[in-house]
Length: 457
Image (cartoon, rainbow, N blue to C red; front, side, top):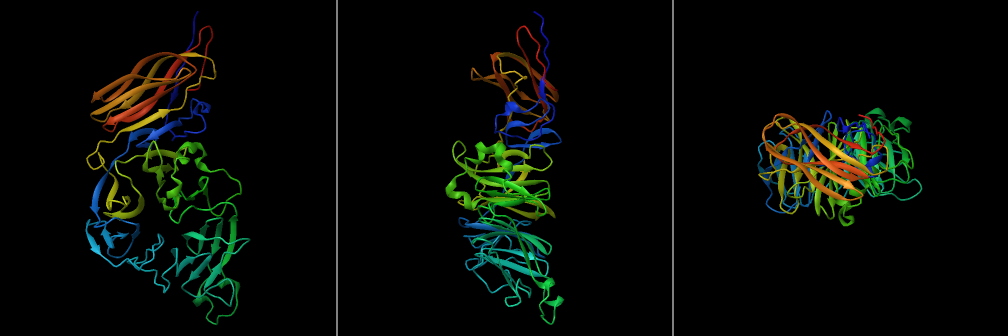
Protein backbone atom coordinates (compact mmCIF):
# COMPACT_ATOMS: atom_id res chain seq x y z
CA UNK A 1 0.00 0.00 0.00
CA UNK A 2 1.44 3.38 -0.89
CA UNK A 3 2.57 5.62 1.89
CA UNK A 4 3.70 9.20 2.23
CA UNK A 5 6.37 10.27 4.67
CA UNK A 6 7.74 13.61 5.70
CA UNK A 7 10.77 14.52 7.76
CA UNK A 8 10.26 15.72 11.30
CA UNK A 9 13.26 17.87 12.11
CA UNK A 10 14.98 20.36 14.36
CA UNK A 11 15.70 23.08 11.84
CA UNK A 12 17.20 25.42 14.44
CA UNK A 13 18.19 24.54 17.98
CA UNK A 14 16.49 26.71 20.61
CA UNK A 15 17.83 25.35 23.88
CA UNK A 16 16.71 22.32 25.85
CA UNK A 17 13.77 21.39 28.03
CA UNK A 18 14.17 17.95 29.53
CA UNK A 19 10.92 17.99 31.52
CA UNK A 20 8.03 17.49 30.94
CA UNK A 21 8.16 14.86 28.22
CA UNK A 22 9.61 16.33 25.07
CA UNK A 23 7.16 14.53 22.76
CA UNK A 24 4.86 17.52 23.31
CA UNK A 25 7.20 19.79 21.35
CA UNK A 26 6.19 20.69 17.82
CA UNK A 27 8.30 19.85 14.81
CA UNK A 28 9.39 23.47 14.47
CA UNK A 29 10.21 24.05 18.14
CA UNK A 30 13.88 23.12 17.88
CA UNK A 31 13.94 22.35 21.61
CA UNK A 32 16.25 19.56 22.67
CA UNK A 33 15.59 17.09 25.44
CA UNK A 34 19.18 17.43 26.65
CA UNK A 35 22.31 19.43 25.85
CA UNK A 36 25.69 18.79 27.45
CA UNK A 37 28.89 20.77 26.92
CA UNK A 38 27.31 22.66 24.03
CA UNK A 39 27.03 26.29 22.92
CA UNK A 40 23.95 27.22 20.89
CA UNK A 41 24.48 30.24 18.65
CA UNK A 42 22.08 31.39 15.94
CA UNK A 43 20.34 28.03 15.89
CA UNK A 44 23.56 26.02 15.60
CA UNK A 45 24.86 23.68 18.29
CA UNK A 46 28.60 23.31 18.76
CA UNK A 47 30.84 21.93 21.53
CA UNK A 48 31.88 24.57 24.06
CA UNK A 49 35.43 25.81 24.47
CA UNK A 50 37.37 24.36 27.37
CA UNK A 51 38.88 25.92 30.46
CA UNK A 52 42.49 26.88 31.01
CA UNK A 53 44.29 26.56 34.33
CA UNK A 54 45.17 30.15 35.19
CA UNK A 55 46.71 29.59 38.62
CA UNK A 56 46.60 27.55 41.81
CA UNK A 57 46.14 29.04 45.28
CA UNK A 58 48.43 27.99 48.11
CA UNK A 59 45.57 26.41 50.09
CA UNK A 60 41.93 25.31 49.66
CA UNK A 61 39.51 28.16 48.98
CA UNK A 62 36.45 28.74 51.16
CA UNK A 63 35.05 31.75 49.29
CA UNK A 64 35.99 33.99 46.38
CA UNK A 65 34.77 37.17 44.72
CA UNK A 66 36.07 39.50 42.05
CA UNK A 67 37.52 42.93 42.81
CA UNK A 68 37.75 45.87 40.44
CA UNK A 69 40.28 48.65 40.93
CA UNK A 70 42.47 51.11 39.03
CA UNK A 71 45.15 48.42 38.98
CA UNK A 72 43.00 45.94 37.05
CA UNK A 73 40.63 43.14 38.00
CA UNK A 74 41.52 40.48 40.49
CA UNK A 75 39.93 37.62 42.44
CA UNK A 76 40.07 37.53 46.24
CA UNK A 77 40.49 34.06 47.71
CA UNK A 78 39.42 33.45 51.28
CA UNK A 79 41.01 30.39 52.86
CA UNK A 80 44.34 30.95 51.16
CA UNK A 81 44.38 34.70 51.97
CA UNK A 82 45.49 35.63 48.47
CA UNK A 83 44.63 38.00 45.66
CA UNK A 84 44.86 36.64 42.10
CA UNK A 85 45.62 39.18 39.38
CA UNK A 86 43.52 38.20 36.36
CA UNK A 87 45.80 39.92 33.86
CA UNK A 88 49.21 38.72 35.01
CA UNK A 89 48.13 35.43 36.59
CA UNK A 90 50.13 36.17 39.74
CA UNK A 91 49.20 35.85 43.41
CA UNK A 92 49.71 38.38 46.21
CA UNK A 93 49.33 37.60 49.90
CA UNK A 94 46.61 39.68 51.63
CA UNK A 95 45.05 39.50 55.06
CA UNK A 96 41.53 38.36 54.32
CA UNK A 97 41.02 36.48 57.57
CA UNK A 98 39.17 39.39 59.21
CA UNK A 99 37.43 40.64 56.09
CA UNK A 100 33.77 39.91 55.60
CA UNK A 101 32.90 37.65 52.69
CA UNK A 102 30.43 39.47 50.45
CA UNK A 103 30.03 39.20 46.72
CA UNK A 104 28.82 42.79 46.49
CA UNK A 105 32.04 44.25 47.77
CA UNK A 106 34.12 45.65 44.98
CA UNK A 107 35.18 49.23 45.56
CA UNK A 108 38.78 49.97 44.59
CA UNK A 109 40.69 47.11 46.23
CA UNK A 110 37.52 45.32 47.47
CA UNK A 111 39.23 44.57 50.78
CA UNK A 112 36.69 46.60 52.69
CA UNK A 113 33.30 48.16 52.23
CA UNK A 114 34.72 51.27 53.90
CA UNK A 115 32.51 50.73 56.90
CA UNK A 116 33.32 49.93 60.49
CA UNK A 117 31.05 46.89 60.42
CA UNK A 118 32.82 43.57 60.11
CA UNK A 119 29.90 41.14 60.34
CA UNK A 120 27.59 42.13 57.47
CA UNK A 121 26.33 39.34 55.24
CA UNK A 122 26.11 41.13 51.89
CA UNK A 123 26.98 44.52 50.44
CA UNK A 124 26.67 46.69 47.37
CA UNK A 125 27.70 50.08 45.99
CA UNK A 126 24.65 52.32 45.49
CA UNK A 127 25.88 55.47 43.74
CA UNK A 128 27.05 57.80 46.53
CA UNK A 129 26.76 55.31 49.37
CA UNK A 130 27.65 51.79 50.34
CA UNK A 131 24.91 49.52 51.60
CA UNK A 132 25.44 46.52 53.84
CA UNK A 133 23.00 44.04 55.33
CA UNK A 134 22.87 42.07 58.54
CA UNK A 135 19.83 40.07 59.52
CA UNK A 136 16.83 42.03 58.21
CA UNK A 137 18.52 45.42 58.48
CA UNK A 138 20.05 47.56 55.72
CA UNK A 139 22.69 50.10 56.71
CA UNK A 140 23.76 53.04 54.55
CA UNK A 141 27.13 54.74 54.99
CA UNK A 142 25.73 58.23 54.25
CA UNK A 143 22.78 60.08 55.78
CA UNK A 144 19.35 58.91 54.60
CA UNK A 145 16.73 56.80 56.23
CA UNK A 146 13.26 55.40 56.46
CA UNK A 147 12.62 57.42 59.62
CA UNK A 148 14.27 60.67 60.77
CA UNK A 149 15.27 59.12 64.09
CA UNK A 150 17.40 56.43 62.43
CA UNK A 151 18.60 58.14 59.27
CA UNK A 152 21.12 55.58 58.02
CA UNK A 153 19.24 52.30 58.41
CA UNK A 154 16.17 50.51 57.09
CA UNK A 155 14.47 47.38 58.40
CA UNK A 156 12.62 44.94 56.16
CA UNK A 157 9.94 44.03 58.68
CA UNK A 158 6.77 43.36 56.70
CA UNK A 159 4.76 40.62 58.32
CA UNK A 160 7.62 38.41 59.44
CA UNK A 161 11.35 38.40 60.05
CA UNK A 162 13.26 37.92 56.81
CA UNK A 163 17.00 37.47 56.65
CA UNK A 164 18.60 39.47 53.84
CA UNK A 165 20.73 37.26 51.61
CA UNK A 166 21.63 39.50 48.64
CA UNK A 167 21.54 43.10 47.42
CA UNK A 168 21.25 43.65 43.67
CA UNK A 169 22.09 47.31 42.88
CA UNK A 170 20.60 49.40 40.09
CA UNK A 171 21.40 53.13 40.49
CA UNK A 172 19.52 54.57 43.47
CA UNK A 173 17.01 51.71 43.46
CA UNK A 174 17.98 48.16 44.20
CA UNK A 175 16.47 44.73 44.77
CA UNK A 176 16.86 42.92 48.05
CA UNK A 177 16.59 39.13 48.03
CA UNK A 178 15.59 37.70 51.35
CA UNK A 179 15.34 34.11 52.42
CA UNK A 180 11.55 34.40 52.41
CA UNK A 181 10.66 37.40 50.26
CA UNK A 182 11.78 39.77 47.50
CA UNK A 183 11.85 43.55 48.04
CA UNK A 184 12.34 46.66 45.93
CA UNK A 185 14.16 49.44 47.79
CA UNK A 186 14.58 53.03 46.67
CA UNK A 187 17.48 54.83 48.34
CA UNK A 188 17.05 58.35 49.72
CA UNK A 189 18.95 61.22 48.14
CA UNK A 190 21.57 61.47 50.83
CA UNK A 191 23.02 64.08 53.18
CA UNK A 192 23.86 66.76 50.62
CA UNK A 193 20.21 66.90 49.46
CA UNK A 194 19.08 67.91 52.94
CA UNK A 195 21.86 69.82 54.74
CA UNK A 196 19.52 70.93 57.53
CA UNK A 197 18.48 67.31 58.18
CA UNK A 198 14.86 68.24 58.28
CA UNK A 199 12.35 65.42 57.63
CA UNK A 200 11.67 65.25 53.91
CA UNK A 201 10.38 62.31 51.88
CA UNK A 202 13.20 62.70 49.34
CA UNK A 203 15.78 61.51 51.86
CA UNK A 204 13.80 58.55 53.17
CA UNK A 205 14.19 55.08 51.72
CA UNK A 206 11.15 53.40 50.20
CA UNK A 207 10.54 49.69 50.60
CA UNK A 208 8.09 47.60 48.63
CA UNK A 209 7.68 43.87 49.03
CA UNK A 210 7.35 42.28 45.59
CA UNK A 211 6.76 38.74 46.78
CA UNK A 212 6.17 37.19 50.17
CA UNK A 213 6.60 33.55 49.15
CA UNK A 214 9.83 33.59 47.14
CA UNK A 215 13.40 33.88 48.35
CA UNK A 216 16.96 33.11 47.32
CA UNK A 217 18.67 30.01 48.73
CA UNK A 218 22.06 31.69 49.24
CA UNK A 219 23.77 35.04 48.95
CA UNK A 220 25.40 34.18 45.61
CA UNK A 221 22.62 32.17 43.94
CA UNK A 222 21.47 34.98 41.63
CA UNK A 223 22.50 36.43 38.28
CA UNK A 224 21.31 38.87 35.64
CA UNK A 225 20.04 37.34 32.39
CA UNK A 226 19.39 39.70 29.48
CA UNK A 227 18.27 42.51 31.79
CA UNK A 228 16.20 40.24 34.03
CA UNK A 229 17.12 39.15 37.53
CA UNK A 230 17.16 35.38 38.02
CA UNK A 231 17.63 33.61 41.33
CA UNK A 232 17.47 30.09 42.72
CA UNK A 233 14.59 29.55 45.10
CA UNK A 234 13.97 26.30 46.96
CA UNK A 235 11.71 25.14 44.12
CA UNK A 236 13.82 26.29 41.15
CA UNK A 237 15.15 29.23 39.16
CA UNK A 238 12.83 32.23 38.97
CA UNK A 239 13.01 35.50 37.04
CA UNK A 240 11.55 38.99 37.07
CA UNK A 241 12.22 42.41 35.55
CA UNK A 242 11.94 45.98 36.81
CA UNK A 243 9.89 45.19 39.87
CA UNK A 244 7.36 43.06 37.98
CA UNK A 245 7.06 39.90 39.99
CA UNK A 246 3.85 37.98 40.56
CA UNK A 247 2.98 35.57 43.32
CA UNK A 248 2.64 31.98 42.20
CA UNK A 249 4.57 32.32 38.94
CA UNK A 250 6.17 28.91 38.28
CA UNK A 251 9.96 28.66 38.06
CA UNK A 252 11.64 28.87 34.68
CA UNK A 253 13.42 25.66 35.57
CA UNK A 254 10.25 23.54 35.65
CA UNK A 255 11.21 22.48 32.11
CA UNK A 256 14.42 20.95 33.51
CA UNK A 257 12.96 19.82 36.82
CA UNK A 258 14.75 16.47 36.66
CA UNK A 259 18.10 18.34 36.75
CA UNK A 260 17.02 20.77 39.49
CA UNK A 261 15.91 17.80 41.61
CA UNK A 262 19.50 16.49 41.53
CA UNK A 263 20.87 19.47 43.52
CA UNK A 264 22.59 18.28 46.69
CA UNK A 265 20.44 19.79 49.49
CA UNK A 266 23.43 19.91 51.85
CA UNK A 267 25.24 22.31 49.49
CA UNK A 268 22.35 24.41 48.19
CA UNK A 269 23.32 27.51 50.20
CA UNK A 270 26.80 27.47 48.61
CA UNK A 271 25.55 27.74 45.00
CA UNK A 272 27.00 30.64 43.01
CA UNK A 273 25.75 32.24 39.82
CA UNK A 274 27.00 35.05 37.58
CA UNK A 275 25.64 36.85 34.54
CA UNK A 276 27.58 38.05 31.52
CA UNK A 277 25.92 39.69 28.51
CA UNK A 278 23.08 37.42 27.31
CA UNK A 279 24.01 34.43 29.46
CA UNK A 280 23.90 33.45 33.10
CA UNK A 281 25.83 30.62 34.71
CA UNK A 282 24.76 28.58 37.75
CA UNK A 283 27.29 26.31 39.47
CA UNK A 284 25.07 23.47 40.72
CA UNK A 285 26.31 20.70 43.03
CA UNK A 286 24.46 17.71 41.60
CA UNK A 287 24.03 14.18 42.90
CA UNK A 288 24.41 11.02 40.78
CA UNK A 289 24.72 10.44 37.88
CA UNK A 290 26.85 13.61 37.83
CA UNK A 291 28.17 13.45 41.38
CA UNK A 292 29.93 16.81 41.09
CA UNK A 293 29.40 20.51 40.58
CA UNK A 294 28.40 21.32 37.00
CA UNK A 295 27.58 24.66 35.39
CA UNK A 296 24.07 25.24 34.04
CA UNK A 297 24.10 27.84 31.25
CA UNK A 298 21.05 29.98 30.48
CA UNK A 299 20.81 32.06 27.30
CA UNK A 300 18.26 34.85 26.93
CA UNK A 301 18.44 34.71 23.13
CA UNK A 302 17.01 31.17 23.08
CA UNK A 303 13.33 30.35 23.13
CA UNK A 304 14.03 27.53 25.54
CA UNK A 305 16.24 29.75 27.79
CA UNK A 306 18.37 26.82 28.95
CA UNK A 307 21.37 26.32 26.70
CA UNK A 308 23.40 23.47 28.15
CA UNK A 309 24.86 21.71 31.14
CA UNK A 310 28.64 22.12 31.18
CA UNK A 311 30.35 19.17 32.83
CA UNK A 312 34.03 19.77 33.60
CA UNK A 313 36.68 17.18 34.61
CA UNK A 314 37.05 18.98 37.94
CA UNK A 315 34.20 20.64 39.82
CA UNK A 316 33.81 24.38 39.30
CA UNK A 317 32.41 25.36 42.70
CA UNK A 318 32.63 29.17 42.56
CA UNK A 319 31.97 31.46 39.59
CA UNK A 320 32.97 35.07 39.17
CA UNK A 321 33.32 37.63 36.37
CA UNK A 322 36.51 39.68 35.92
CA UNK A 323 38.30 41.32 33.01
CA UNK A 324 41.33 39.95 31.20
CA UNK A 325 42.82 41.96 28.33
CA UNK A 326 40.00 44.42 28.93
CA UNK A 327 37.31 41.81 28.18
CA UNK A 328 34.88 40.55 30.87
CA UNK A 329 35.37 36.80 31.30
CA UNK A 330 33.87 34.04 33.43
CA UNK A 331 36.26 32.38 35.90
CA UNK A 332 35.73 29.21 37.89
CA UNK A 333 37.37 28.10 41.13
CA UNK A 334 37.66 24.61 42.56
CA UNK A 335 37.46 25.03 46.33
CA UNK A 336 39.30 21.85 47.35
CA UNK A 337 42.32 22.26 45.03
CA UNK A 338 42.40 26.08 44.93
CA UNK A 339 42.70 25.96 41.15
CA UNK A 340 41.48 28.97 39.17
CA UNK A 341 40.21 28.33 35.66
CA UNK A 342 39.50 30.75 32.82
CA UNK A 343 36.41 29.37 31.09
CA UNK A 344 35.82 29.36 27.34
CA UNK A 345 39.48 29.66 26.42
CA UNK A 346 40.80 26.64 24.50
CA UNK A 347 39.94 23.43 22.65
CA UNK A 348 40.32 21.14 25.69
CA UNK A 349 39.69 21.29 29.42
CA UNK A 350 43.30 21.86 30.43
CA UNK A 351 44.35 18.93 28.22
CA UNK A 352 41.23 16.75 28.68
CA UNK A 353 39.18 16.22 25.54
CA UNK A 354 35.66 17.65 25.69
CA UNK A 355 32.83 15.21 24.97
CA UNK A 356 29.63 16.98 24.04
CA UNK A 357 26.18 15.69 23.18
CA UNK A 358 22.68 16.74 22.20
CA UNK A 359 19.58 14.59 22.42
CA UNK A 360 16.50 15.64 20.50
CA UNK A 361 12.94 15.68 21.71
CA UNK A 362 10.87 12.56 21.01
CA UNK A 363 9.58 12.50 17.45
CA UNK A 364 5.89 11.66 17.86
CA UNK A 365 4.47 12.36 14.40
CA UNK A 366 1.07 13.24 15.94
CA UNK A 367 0.19 9.68 16.89
CA UNK A 368 0.90 7.42 19.85
CA UNK A 369 0.58 4.37 17.65
CA UNK A 370 3.50 2.20 16.66
CA UNK A 371 5.54 3.66 13.80
CA UNK A 372 8.46 2.51 11.72
CA UNK A 373 11.30 5.01 12.05
CA UNK A 374 13.33 4.92 8.89
CA UNK A 375 15.69 7.53 7.48
CA UNK A 376 17.56 9.70 10.02
CA UNK A 377 19.90 12.53 9.12
CA UNK A 378 22.31 15.03 10.68
CA UNK A 379 23.46 18.13 8.80
CA UNK A 380 26.77 19.54 10.06
CA UNK A 381 30.06 21.18 9.25
CA UNK A 382 32.97 19.36 10.91
CA UNK A 383 35.15 22.52 10.96
CA UNK A 384 38.25 20.33 10.75
CA UNK A 385 38.77 16.91 12.30
CA UNK A 386 35.88 15.66 14.42
CA UNK A 387 34.87 12.34 15.96
CA UNK A 388 31.10 11.95 16.06
CA UNK A 389 28.61 9.19 16.92
CA UNK A 390 24.99 9.23 15.77
CA UNK A 391 22.49 7.19 17.81
CA UNK A 392 18.79 6.35 17.62
CA UNK A 393 16.91 5.95 20.93
CA UNK A 394 13.49 4.26 20.95
CA UNK A 395 10.63 4.08 23.43
CA UNK A 396 8.21 1.13 23.61
CA UNK A 397 10.17 -0.93 23.02
CA UNK A 398 13.14 0.78 24.64
CA UNK A 399 16.58 0.62 23.09
CA UNK A 400 19.58 2.52 21.80
CA UNK A 401 21.33 1.83 18.51
CA UNK A 402 24.45 3.26 16.89
CA UNK A 403 23.46 4.50 13.44
CA UNK A 404 26.66 6.11 12.23
CA UNK A 405 30.10 7.24 13.36
CA UNK A 406 33.09 8.91 11.75
CA UNK A 407 36.45 10.40 12.64
CA UNK A 408 37.93 12.91 10.23
CA UNK A 409 37.45 16.15 8.34
CA UNK A 410 34.32 15.87 6.20
CA UNK A 411 33.66 19.57 5.73
CA UNK A 412 29.97 20.34 5.23
CA UNK A 413 28.12 17.03 5.22
CA UNK A 414 24.73 15.39 5.58
CA UNK A 415 25.01 12.03 7.33
CA UNK A 416 22.08 9.72 6.65
CA UNK A 417 21.34 6.37 8.26
CA UNK A 418 18.46 3.90 8.33
CA UNK A 419 17.04 3.32 11.81
CA UNK A 420 14.54 0.65 10.66
CA UNK A 421 12.97 0.40 14.13
CA UNK A 422 9.32 -0.12 15.03
CA UNK A 423 8.40 1.79 18.20
CA UNK A 424 6.02 4.40 19.56
CA UNK A 425 8.58 7.20 20.11
CA UNK A 426 12.06 7.85 18.79
CA UNK A 427 14.76 10.44 19.30
CA UNK A 428 18.24 11.14 17.96
CA UNK A 429 21.48 11.64 19.87
CA UNK A 430 24.71 13.12 18.56
CA UNK A 431 27.84 12.59 20.64
CA UNK A 432 30.91 14.65 19.73
CA UNK A 433 33.95 12.91 21.21
CA UNK A 434 36.48 15.36 19.82
CA UNK A 435 36.60 18.41 17.60
CA UNK A 436 34.16 21.34 17.41
CA UNK A 437 31.70 20.69 14.56
CA UNK A 438 28.73 22.97 13.88
CA UNK A 439 25.58 20.84 14.09
CA UNK A 440 23.07 22.67 11.89
CA UNK A 441 19.97 20.45 11.96
CA UNK A 442 18.74 16.90 12.46
CA UNK A 443 15.62 15.02 11.37
CA UNK A 444 13.88 11.67 11.04
CA UNK A 445 11.28 10.02 8.80
CA UNK A 446 8.64 7.53 9.90
CA UNK A 447 5.61 5.73 8.48
CA UNK A 448 2.51 3.86 9.56
CA UNK A 449 1.23 1.04 7.40
CA UNK A 450 -1.94 1.97 5.56
CA UNK A 451 -1.98 5.71 6.34
CA UNK A 452 0.02 8.86 5.89
CA UNK A 453 1.51 10.84 8.76
CA UNK A 454 2.77 14.37 8.69
CA UNK A 455 4.59 16.73 10.98
CA UNK A 456 5.69 20.31 10.69
CA UNK A 457 9.11 20.98 9.22
